[in-house]
Length: 316
Length: 316
Image (cartoon, rainbow over all chains, first blue to last red):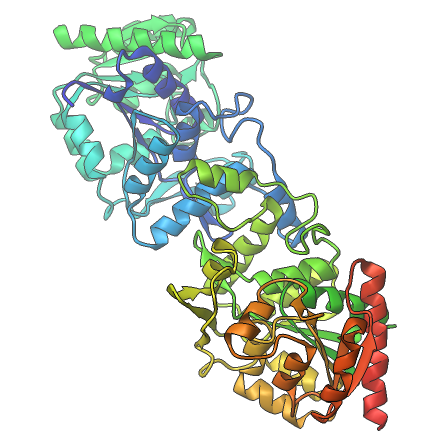
């Protein structure tokens, strides 16, 4: 498909803008969402892909609107029974959510690549956009903290991302290859959008895939970043703490610096308008708008503006 | 523990009498239930042990009283979601039930023997009796029908045990060894009860384990069979069809003939009282009583009578 819209996304924030793009596009089949799998992990013997699931549930309108992750009107009977067997639940897995993990794990054990499984599941949930894991290979995000090196979900969920972050390791990233569908989508892109996801543990792992980064560098399409930092704070999750811990300025300008040389444009929130000149001085164009997505209309509106902004970069 | 009561059981019928024994014994820790695992199978990548689960749920009072299998007040959100992913559900798995399969499968993949997993799960569900799978090895019951050889659950559940049965294969039985706990319980038994379970696909696989059969032959304790055939019909499941298909008389006498040389006594229902002499002519004593267990009281009553009958055989 020529002229694709490619979104790079992590979990909740990325899923919201991906959903907005799905709503904004006249034909959502043009949308390809490349999703971080660096925080995938195994629990109760099941392969969990938190970001992939969040995007999939969001695009299929199954997502819990309260949390942004998980499934709406979800029940937790399986997890309660797991607790009866003496396992202390620390990661919320709902009954319907378990179906995803069970079937995905079975298919992976049978040798089916994650990307193929994901595509089939997305189609079964009536998603017409392409949902693409960044890689079929194992990459594990590890977080260096004052208490030592932690698995990502231990840091993020079990310890509520309260630890200071001294470093981030993407274990396995050197030998991981991007999924062919991701590379194809980038080659066919007319716009590439980095959703407002964490630069280090959501967008970072995707860009750290050597082949994928090269494809982005080669892509003719404009690359637009939507800042996940608004008014000096992360909308959700540990992005601000991580920026601080890793020596970055915690602002949309700090975000822009991370992507300088790769991105052509940055979308920042109206509250950050005074950072515009400094970002443009880095060689990127800036769109100032309301970037906080409180509801579905906000998602679609931000997506439309981001697409128009990308289009304007193409013609300059 | 000296003087144990050992029950051999399959699914629903066996579980009921095992439950009765648990209720009847002054100290239910004396009870050891050795359960068939020949109809274990894999579904959605999970190891399912239908008989073991039925006995475990029954002994922990979690069992669905309507069906005899599954968990009471169960919900089916996981299975519904599995269906949304395009898998046609043919085997009913409830949300809480899935917890059992998930944790068991994870532990088995980590190398823990099924018997150790089962013991831990039973303790977590406050079962003080010993719940013992017949073997930690894989045994698969296959059914020869006019339509060919079928996996047991395909024959039993998917095809509603409607096929004629020409033969039964216990794949893997030659190389399977009984669990040490099962052999220990038999050696320490003061009574051994074959619950009213299917002679071919429930009790049969247990007895087909060479080491276990030898232990039974060596055991000092009396062996009592409770007939699963009442008035010429199976109380549940395909026992009658199988007896017919395999050339046995479909009656409590036919059951007694199967166990002749191994059992010391047979418990038959009052409706079958005219078979008593013929069974005694095979060299076994007979107890005539009401064997249909409609409620918990019936279970306990039949267990008490069976235990007293076994005791009487010991003193003769």
